[in-house]
Image (cartoon, rainbow, N blue to C red; front, side):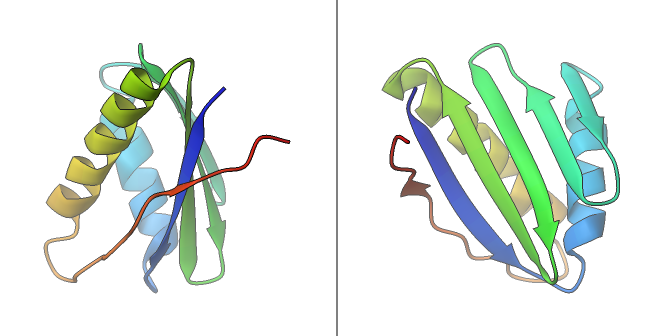
Length: 97
């Protein structure tokens, strides 16, 4: 299963996790607490975890096309919710374990 991950540096990482999960949860299944979140998109799954001032976002899908769809969806929403600060992020492939 192909996967990609990115790290977002922000002192507001927990707030971004909750905002993203709450927003996506209006359309698809989402669960979260203060440190972790999971969103089930039709194309794949997105897992989020707060680690200090970082938000680790990892997306999984059955194939590359769906993985691209999930990462692009998540990226566009990160940009949309980050109005007050730049949140540069770069997706990297996760090695199969």
